[in-house]
Amino acid sequence: MGKTGDQTTGSAAPFVPKTTSVRTLSAAAHECRGCDLYKHATQVVFGAGPKGARVMFVGEQPGDLEDRQGEPFVGPAGALLDKALADAGIPRAEVYVTNAVKHFKWEPRGKRRIHKKPRVSEIKACRPWLEAELRAIKPAIVVCLGATAAQSVLGPQFKLMQHHGEVLPSPLADRVLATVHPSSVLRAPDSEGRRAAYDMLVADLKIAAATLTQASHR
Image (cartoon, rainbow, N blue to C red; front, side, top):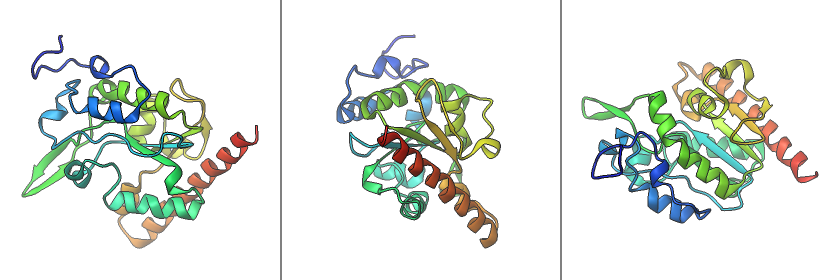
């Protein structure tokens, strides 16, 4: 399939420029027609953070607020992530945040737009953008937030609750750690569940912080 008009190509690869400039990559992503998700999203939501970030966080996809503002992790889940980073001792200013899928996938429920899980084909179509971000940032560790992001980086067989907090190699990065997505903490049914999920998130992030310290001493 060609790169013509509004026809989707099945992969973002034809749209990804050969560059390590995040600004250039982000600008090019606005023209991406790798899958159909761009048709219903307000805009692309590319990654954000310093070029020399030592940690790259990968979530599933932008949410409603991110889609409207064009920035990743600016909604309630982003605020919770900021708090968890502070509790884990990871400076927020040294973090790059992005998503496995760069467009908001949703379904209408009344007047609200409700998050809908992206298909495997949509995650694969968007992977060239994530690969380009990894080449540009060269993080010491990649932290996957939630099962979808973890499986996109560590493979479809990865079981989040069995292996969260473990530092593992992947074809995309030497050090990858997976943990729960902040939005799942917010969705926990009661305060006890939220507290337990938040404690797990912070404990896993502390492992990422310790891994960073070890990496810098080598």
